[in-house]
Each structure stands twice: as structure tokens, then as C-alpha cells.
Image (cartoon, rainbow, N blue to C red; front, top):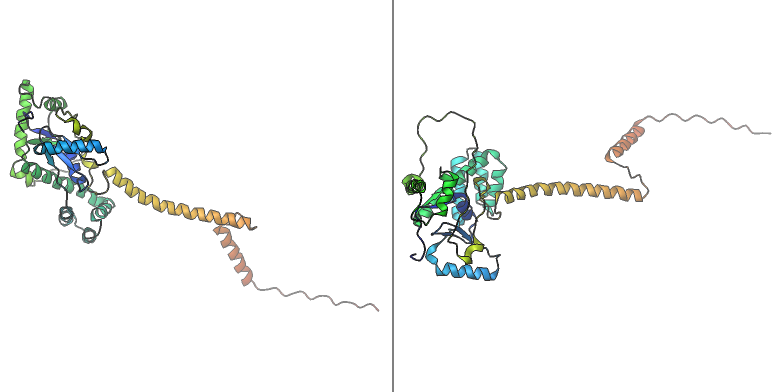
Length: 328
């Protein structure tokens, strides 16, 4: 790739954005990671045919520049789900239910629906999923010979990180940026260590239980200067966080998946509304036939009780009629 400029420090990649691309990649969805600057491309088939043709020409002409994101196979997805059940689920009934779901059709969707319906398992699943995919992505980047760091792992000021992106190909930079580049080089080596693929649990006494403080990761602006004109419309730059990534095949984000779950609840409510409408129509029909339009289940029950009391009450003897006096 002699025709392209050379990065002067490891590429700063978004872990959660790549993780999202890994989850969505399928036979109908192709994602590519650029080796020069680290941007993502999504070959969206819904774009104009002319734009897709130009993108294909760019990908064909510079094949060595773009790395195709792997597609998750059925067996890989199944292995992830089985790993979670065997390692993190302790309730026997829950474990058996999940193992049955994994063997069924649409296993990923049914698995998620069950997990999201059990809050005790949901937090464990999200942590497990993040850890497994992080290892999977690091392994792929290593095999593809990328020099990289994850922006979510950096502890640099926002301004410095953005300057590193802006001056990625500049040989001469300020002393401050030169020191930041050395820090990136040191960080990049950790992803090629054995511990990156086999993280060890920390030894020693467990820390005291302290209230967990959620700290939102500070993400900087996307700064790309080497995106070909033919690929600009296919840049994949969504604002993805750890909580918005989903394991689902059908739904692009957790919001879409939750909307699907809420849709199931609304369907049951709509059935109740339909029944209410039927009862209302019956009341209108009875009023047209000359009956009271205020008939309700309560009044019908009262009428039945009165009828039962009337039948059970002893009948009073009839008074004898006075004899008629015949006139002579």
C-alpha cells in the first residue's frame, strides 16, 4: 500500500462500533474496516445502484486496503449462548429452559427474549457478551495485522485524542503529541499480549462492596481525511455505546428490540380493547331490540338472585271467595 500515506501512530478504533458491525454482519450485510485510517464502511444495499457500483469498484481496486468484517455463523452464536448458560446461569430450571431454547428455531431471538424477561440474568449476559466479543475482535485484528488501540480504553484528554486523529499522517508534531504517540505505542502492545485473549481474574482479597458509579465513556469526534469519494456515502459512524449493542439478528439496536418486546404487550392490550368493543356492540344491539341499553353483568346477576328468591319463597294460601247470593 505504497500509494497511501502511513499512519505515525496506532489507529484509534471504536471498540463498540466494531462490535456492533460484528453483530450485524451477515450474508446480506458487508462491513469493511479500513487499514489506512481505521474507518468503517457498510455496503448498504438500499443505497442507489450507481453508488453501490462505485463502491464495488473501490473495494476491488484496493482489496489490500479493506478488511471484511467476519460474519457470525450459527455455530459461533450457539457456542456463545451455551458458554453463557454453562458458566453464568446457576438456577437449574433456568439453565434447562435456555438450553432448550438454544436448540430451537430462531434461537438468538428467543434466547434474548427470555434473558430480557429475567433481570437477574440480563446483567450477567450483557457483561459476558461484551467480554467475549472484545476477545473475538482483538483476535481478528491481530490476525489481520492491525496496529491499533481502542478509544474506550484510552485515558487521554479529549483535545489530545482529536489532535492525534487530525495529525495521524504528520511526521512532525508538537512535543505533547509526540508523548501521546509514545503512550499509544505502549498501549497497542498490550493487545498483542497473551493476557489480551486470556484475561485472568484478579487475585487477592475481593474489594469492599462500594456503590457502583456509572461513568460514561468520553468519545471524541470522528476525523477522517483519507476516505475515497466513492465510499463517503457508506461511512458507518453511528453513536454506539455498550448498552445499545444487541445480539439480535433481526433488530439493529437494543431500542428496536425493546420496542418489539413492548409490541407484544400492546398486542394483548389490543385484544382486551377488542373484547370491550364487542360488548359495547352487543349493548347497542340489545337497545335496538327494545331492551334497556344499561344492561350490565351486575344487573343481570341481581335479576337472577331475585328470581331464585321468588321461586324458593313458600306460596301463600289463596283467600276463599265469598259465595254469590242468588236473587229470587
